[in-house]
Length: 130
Image (cartoon, rainbow, N blue to C red; front, side, top):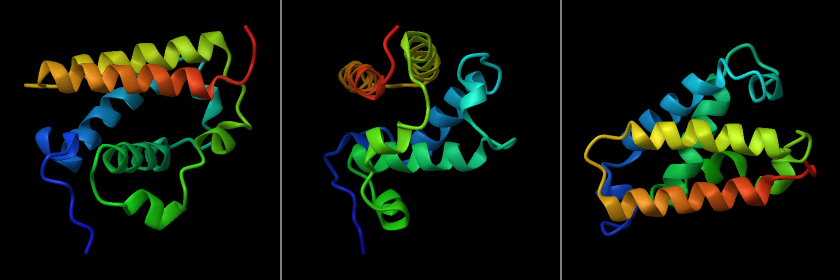
């Protein structure tokens, strides 16, 4: 059985429910964003929401459910079909920042770690100049 590290950010923030809520807040913004919404072919954002929540939970020390279901994350490869330019980068960061803002009782050090990671991830996934 896959047991999370008791000292991980995953455990400090309350486990998978924290990431499920964080990503739900993020996708609430994405659902109405004119730059990001067209990147999601499904009418229902649910599958993408679940994948991101599982990925973030795993990244921060939770169970390996994401990798068990999808294999190695290969984030750049998975995002390559989507034009991620400056506008998409900024919109993604804006919605993820708002989602983090909505977290209740988040330790400042954990908040800083989350913000640092999402900024790095957004920069890493950008694949179009502009």
